[in-house]
Amino acid sequence: MPLLRLLGQVLTRPLDKHFACCLLCGSGSEVQAGVCASCQCDLPSLGHACIGCALPLAATQDSHCAACIQRPPPQASSVACWSYAYPVAQLVQRFKYQRDFAAGRTLAELAAQELHPQVQQASPPDILVPVPMHWRKQLFGRGYNQAQLIADIFGDYWRIPVAAGALRKIAASDSQQTLSRAQRRKNLAHSFDAGAQVKDLHVGLVDDVITTGATQEAAAQSLLAAGASRVSVYALARTP
Image: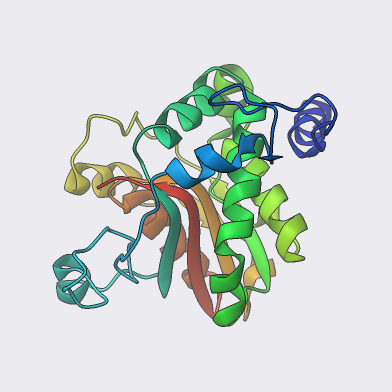
């Protein structure tokens, strides 16, 4: 769609180094991807987290949370760059609901750099697939899919192709914001459909925020049902 291509160009266009200033403090010194070095140090790193769902864990805890031990998720792993807290949460909100594409580009570029060693350390995905929105919500509501724009930047930085059409949202589920994990899972049941192009491929599923993990699990189940050999989840942030 022309609108999506235009938004993708806006989001991925590099900042003019002569005029760039920090989105958070306004400083014009040592700005990288829209944020100065000082503010980058203040971003809430996720730290030690569950391999299965990226839930933050205490340093003394094992590699998986209790929920993933009791009920392993369909995805092989989940990785998020930051905790969903100030100022990352505010930048995500601006990107997602206020069309602040500079905020989205900044988060995606910084996350791509930060997560790159983990992507290379493990077996890198063959393709990246953004978590889709239902076409009605995308066309008549938000106007763009933030996960697709993030995936495009990840793909450019990691040199991995993006297959935006490999996964579709076929059911217009209700808003997830006020639902519990169990309610979200029920709300998302049978809401995704994956295409044959994922068969035998390691798929990197890209989203903006992992909240309860229900969305990512439902999408991963669909990808695996379509023949994907493995699904790894990548996100900007994870809620506590």
